[in-house]
Every structure is written in C-alpha cells, then in structure tokens.
Image (cartoon, rainbow, N blue to C red; front, side, top):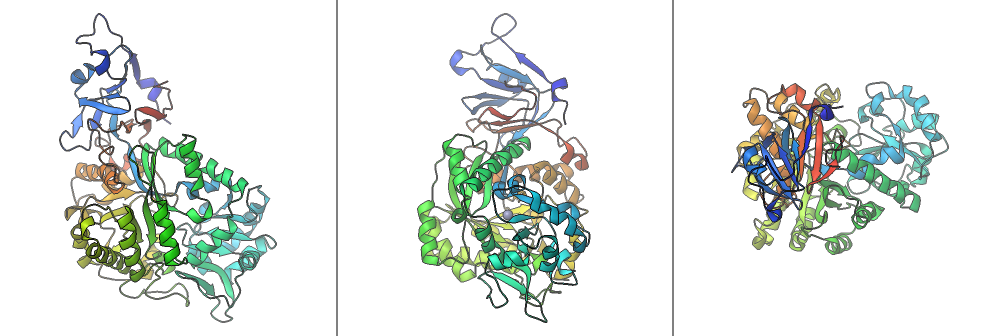
Length: 575
Ligand SMILES: [Zn+2]
C-alpha cells in the first residue's frame, strides 16, 4: 500500500559531538517529526517543518533547526522527507459499531448487487443462512430501496423464496428502511392490521392492504431491537466489531470520532464502556445517545439526563444526544416544505416523515442542554432543517444563560431553504455535512426525480462557510467510506472553479480537523498542531496541496499518533 519503509529514514540521535545546543533533559522531546510539510490548521502559524512531542503533547512547532533544539538523549527523530503532517482527522459523525457488524453478524451483503434486478438476488440471499452468527436472524443489507419498489410482487415474497423458515431482515444502505421476509414479520408481531409506529411506516400493498415486507424509518429501527437482543455472545461480537472499527479508523488517520447514534437501550453502549475500562480505545470518542421516538418523554428524558458524562481527560465522553428530525429523500421520509414531486409508495406522506416533531424537540433540547448535552440532529430535508433551527431557537429563549456554551449541530443538511442559511450563524448552530459520495453513484437520478425542481440550496458547504460558519465534514460510515481523504478530494473536485483549489483543500481539511473538534467541544485539546494540544497527528505520504485533486483520495496514511503514541504504524517507525 505504501513505500514508507523504503523512503523514510529513522534517526536515533544521541547527544555528543555533532549535536549542537543539546536540550536539557527536562525540556527534551520524546519524539520529533522533521523535514515535513506541516499544515497546522492553526492560523497563528499555518505552516511549519517540524513538531516536537513530549508526554503526549505538542511542545514546539517550527522549522527544522528550531525543533532539533529539543533533541535529547533518547529523542526519536523521524525525518519525513517532505511528507505531509496534519492534525489527526476527526470524524464528527460515524457509526463504528453498526458499521463493523458486517464483520461479525450482518452476513448478507447486498452492496455489490446494486443496480441489478432484486429478483436475481434470491440465490445469493439463500446462502446467507449458512453462516454461523451469534443471532437467530439472518441480517445484512446495503441495497437501494428503489430496487425493492421496482419489484412486481411484494418484496417479502422474494425473501421468502430465498429463506422461508428463518427471520430475515436486510437494511437499506441509508439504514432508513428494512426489508423483511414473512418469518421476520411474524416474529416481530407485524400483521396487516398493525398500526404505524411514531416516525415510521409499515408499507402495505395498495390493493390488498397486506404488509409488503418493507418497514420505513423508525418501524425498521424498532425491529432491530427485537432481532439484536443483547445476549452475551452478541455483546462479545459487538466488542470485536468495535475493535475492528477502531483499527480501520487509525488506518485512515482518524484520532477523534463522534459515534452518531448510540442505541443505549439495545446493548450498544456496553462495548464502549468495556473498551474504556480495558484501556483499548484508540480514538477520542464522543457518544451521541439516541433519542428513541417511541419512548415516553418523561422516562426517556430522565434516563438521558442520568447518562451525561464529560471529562476532558477521558477518551470517552457521553456529551451528545442524537435526534432524527426526519428521514431520507430516497424513502420520501426527508421532511420537505413543499411536497415531493414523486412518491415511492401510496402509503408515504408527501411532505416527509418526522421522527421527532418540532414540539418534542423543543422540550428535549431545553431540558437536555441544561444538563450539559450538545444536540446532534439529523435534519436532511428543508423542513427538518427549519424545524430543528426553530426548536433550538425556542430553547435559546428558555435558557438564555447557555448562549455560546452549547455546540448544537444539524447533520446531513441535504436541502436548505435559502432563508434559513443565515440562521446557522445567528443561532450558533454548527453544520455537519457528508461529502464522501461516489460521483458515479446511479442513485442520484432517482433522488432528484423524487424532489423535482425546488427553491433550495443543496449541501451548502461553501454557502455556510461564506456566511462565517465553521462547517464540519464527516463520513457517516458505513453509509459511505470512512476515508477523510475521499472527502477532501471530493470537495476540491466538486467545487472546482468556485474557489481556488488550495482554498478548497484547506477548507476541507479544517472541516475534518479543527471544526470537527469544535463540534466535539474539545478544540482546546486537539484539532490543530499547536503548542500545548495533544499530539493527535496524522502523516500522509504526499502533500495534499501539491497533487492533483483527483489523486487526493489515493494518498496513503503513513502514521497515526494519538497523544504521541502510534495507533497506526505500518512500518514500525516508533517501535
Ligand atoms: Zn449517521
């Protein structure tokens, strides 16, 4: 994957002849990275050549000569030969547990079948039942819902042909719908009369009223609760998934994350607490605790309040609550100000679907921000964005003393009405946007056909930046790749011509480092290469500013440091 070993010289410098101005032992660095293109994301000194590290912190940033002054008896000095050094990437919205579940118990992977007729998947799906997993159901997914809506019969019948006797539940790639066979519908107690849950739809055959096997939005979410009961075997598998995810994050140069939705009522919190206890966390982690749409508000608010936990010395902080205001465009569940141009099914609401209404959001935000929580709200459609901003504005009125103290954020923000753009800055709300899609993705046409023409700004990265907002970029993995380099390259390619390329690259790096750190409320400790901050650092084999934007996603991560310790070091530089 990279030629790091061949090109990097590791020098163990010792005091003595030839080494001028030796540092005193108590001022010496443990590690020096030198001869590098250091992009600090610190406006007081944007570029440097070298960084000195001691006790997990950055003790000096400067040119090579300045920093070599910090060389002591046992300092490890790494000559990076022109490679790039950046603050460790911070993914402010990612799903490490769910994303890695494919490794352990989501055995039926449909992503590679996208674009083909779902009737032709039967043979492949039949084999999914052969795997040994810690759950009684056959699970997986990765398909587009459009493939199921194109079928000429009820989607559950296709699954029944593949696996008639075991419950099967396959999750659409966005996670906003589930595809079930008849055995799964029966196990879930869903029949043709079952009413829709809060924030969800059980799709029915328009002629017969029969459940089709598609559960939209929170209807599918609640099903997961049943299929993924927290047995000891499943909890072990989840912990292994987390370890797998963390390795993947380190390989991608990611040193801080926000887990964008922790199902605390389903056993997804325990693997994190175990990792903390066993000292196996390899990234600073903020957990966004899921607000369940179906739970009673009094009970849920009490429980969430009791779970708040901050502490800047801890790698694990429970400081965010995650809400879904709405769903996604591909299901017509993204909430819109004007009706959809096309409906995917007669049962859907033409204006989209709320998981949490504005009224409920008002109460939750008002009460939870008093405890310390920052809100992380999935708001994808223009109506969801407006309602979420309204709810935050309401809470601001109720809690005026908290102005400037909370970092609420809206995530996704696929469509915004132009008149709502200025409200982000006005209300001090951060925008957390994903930009890691594949340009050749064939689902884009479907998406646009559902929306039709409308007066909105799509994915307003540049617009919000221009209005003075600290725009955050993140992956939403495993919806799309976790590679920050993919996003940085995409921003430079997609907005080509709107700003100079180097400005775009700088903006994208900032969105994945300092701005993400601000969203996680820990920018005083990390997010830039500045003296006093933790040495959370990534080394890239090429200077991203000097290569073609199309090549950025193909650059290699050569080294990832968390507090000065290597968490990804494929060539054993720090061993
Ligand atoms: Zn997400």
